[in-house]
Length: 166
Image 1 (cartoon, rainbow, N blue to C red):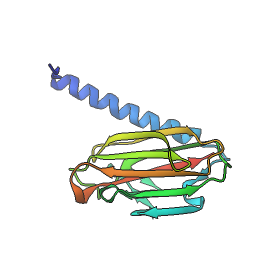
Image 2 (cartoon, rainbow, N blue to C red):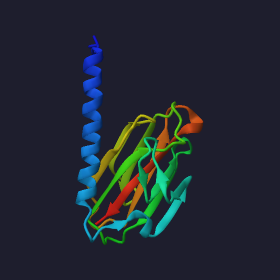
Image 3 (cartoon, rainbow, N blue to C red):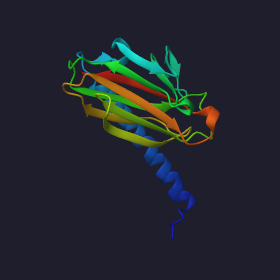
Image 4 (cartoon, rainbow, N blue to C red):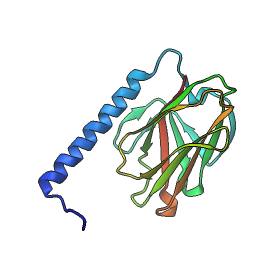
């Protein structure tokens, strides 16, 4: 039987989630070193239903210099060349102002085409900032970001921001 939370418990839980999300974003911003390379500066090997957005504003009004837009309703993906030159990849998953309320998306991160590093589920319009990584990409030839939408078809836009390799 599922436990129902009181209005007070729900409010505190929402507040804790927002604080944790903000804290995670802050940690990611502090971790980026001078040696970090933005995803946009890597060679794009292939891409499908993916677009670079500069600048970008997420669904909560936060502004970023760069957003990597994936149309999860069309199973968007992008592959970036690494040539074994980097050891870690990290980013933040957010939704945009164009993301519909019925989206229910997944983001998967692979290295070398087929080695799944992680699948992030339940990405939707209410997702604030979801830190992913850092993933070990030592000696990787490439990194692939794949998306899918199991919700309403025409509103599945998810974004990566603060996407770096080191």
